[in-house]
Image (cartoon, rainbow, N blue to C red; front, top):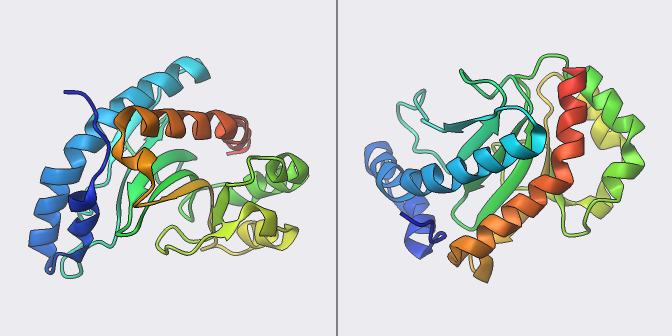
Length: 205
């Protein structure tokens, strides 16, 4: 089956009331597409990185009451899990698709990675100008790369719960989202720009 992109129904999943009903929609509408796009992305990254990486699809298993506001796939070099490792993400909120290199609070040696990123601040700032930063993977909020300053990375280094995600957000009406080939190209080119940061994070973890 060829990946055909995401559509209005996929984004409307997050308007469904109730944990069970929303989870069923995530599992039937979105996760099969994550499997398709994620398999290709993992193969592409394995080739470019020169070592195998593994696809993980968020299960939301800990939820018992509140339905998830977003869902995602993650790719990293650990077969068992991704949260404690630098990882790549593609996911959906109700109004956008996000493409991240994600370094979240469960990561050991977060401060060492942050320090390495501070040393490479000019390199990060030279990434494409449509890149954005998130400081909390649970929230939609993001800041333009142009607004990134040292204090954001220092907070990532010094605050235990602080996170750092960098990449692109595409509005749900962006034409690339509805075209499987264009979306794959966009995600791959975003990851290409982020691979040096990913490798730096691996080195310091």
